[in-house]
Length: 118
Image (tube, rainbow, N blue to C red; front, side, top):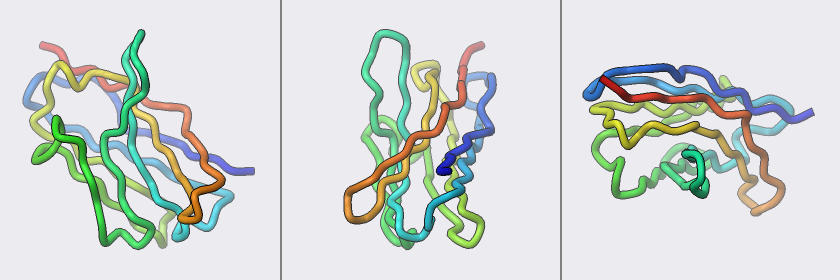
């Protein structure tokens, strides 16, 4: 059974930092492109960052460039999202997604809430 389990969410003041983790099981982790998405109520889930299967390439959406960093440790089946200089507009449920490099199948985690508020 495939599972992606996120953790590390919480409440933080503007300017603060959080590190999200996503641990995968049931897949050959090193063959999956991993991504972080976020979603606020009433809006579509949006891509935040992604990292290649080997960890050599990473991509970010413009609103988080320079503030967020995605990384992975394949030996631990874990992908991270280090979030710094957090803003209220970063408030969302953050989801981990894994998609095999061939494009199929893909899996989602259950999400973790991040709240940025003073």
